[in-house]
Image (cartoon, rainbow, N blue to C red; front, side, top):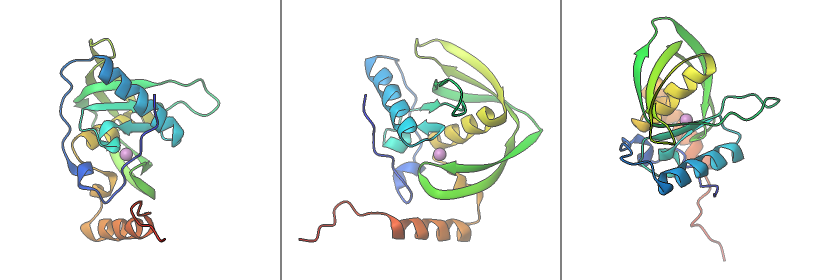
Length: 174
Ligand code: NI
C-alpha cells in the first residue's frame, strides 16, 4: 500500500470522465487500498481514483466519526439509480480543492448500484452524510467538482487563489 499524491485544481484530469472497471483483480484491489491509505492520510471522508490521476470508476468512503471504529466502504462502477425529491444541505469540502467549503443542496436519499471487492453487484440506499459523500464522489467520476455548483466568476476566483498558493515542485533555486 502507498499514499499517493492528490491532484488539486487547476488540473484538467479532474474534468475527465473515468472509465468503468472491467474486472476486479489484484491491481484494482491494490488501487482501492492505496485510495484508502491516501484518504486516511489526508483526513478525508471520500476519495475518487481520478483524484490520484487514475481514470477508473472507483471511489472509497469512510464517514465514521473519529471516536468510532473505521468503516471503509469501496464502490466500483457506482451508478445512481434513484434520488429523492427531498434534499439536504451540507457544507462540502474536497481534497482536490484545498481550504474551500461550499454549501451544496443535494437529494437527501440516493440508491446506488455498484460492484464490490468480490466483483459482485450490490445496491445501497443511503441518506445523510453518506448520501452526500457518495454523490460528491460519483460526480468526480464524471469530471464534476463542487466548484461547478458556483458561477464561473466565483469558480475562477477560487482557482486563482489556489493556483497562487500551489507549490511548484519543479522550481529549484540553486
Ligand atoms: Ni472531492
